[in-house]
Length: 419
Image (cartoon, rainbow, N blue to C red; front, side, top):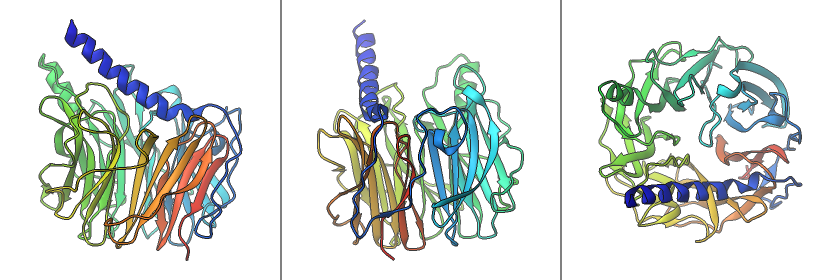
């Protein structure tokens, strides 16, 4: 009886923390930004207070991809519909919208679920998203392709032939235009269930495509035991190898962060980012972020409610994850911090995160010019009342932008760096 009570309390604790980080989704007001010389914003696209359509004004999640000519591809989900828009002038003008698919209430729109989009130098665009096949949260990842820069797309089709459950795809486009995709896969859970056994969580699966997403190699497992409901962070190292970070399940049901390099030989050893000692069977819906700098240094940011530390933290590794630095807290202790995101360009790093002050959601950014050894003072770059998506960092060359979708103040692509 006592173990059941403790388990219920653990789940309640996670739900309360996640609820508090989402309370910024209530109400509406005009956003205010830091108008310093280093931070400029394109005119925000306003969001309607009554959202009944599938346009960007009703979106719950939006994922950007910037092209070399300044065109922005934006994939979003709204009211069960997946769409892709093309913007000119770094997000200032919406030129066209393509409706990719409509799944209604079965579309996966959880806190860590979002459509993924990448494009190669030839103008081929690849999109991935997931939707639920049944009432037991079993999902399917669909993909669609465009050969004309995102003006038209192929009919969405399943990524894999396996009939169990696949969710939370993450994408990378490599310098040779090949595509890397990784996701949470539950086929091992399904197999165990068929044999009368119980298996926790899911697995981290991945695959590559060398033909723009028309075909993929046979999927492989990087880790057979992971959390089933947290997004996977992805980045490329200087050797063009994907590096992933995710919430793994360690012995004893501990759900802490792990990183792995995916080399030409396959998935390399699982490396633990930090010993947070978070023992829970609940779903945090709060995945990590990773950026690999020009020196090959891994930079990781994550959320935890572990017995040894609680909050949002950052750590780095100079030996491909074999060991990590002591975790540093992101934001002020006791503040409601969430959704960290990292970006690296050479030796420069940017770290963005969201805070809720009881009335508004605020996005902060801090920068390091020496590969994470020291960091500048955090700056508040934008804030809003009401619902807001995760803050995401993207770049076009050496120019860094914050991509942020808000319900009250619209989608914003905010310039973070000077030319």
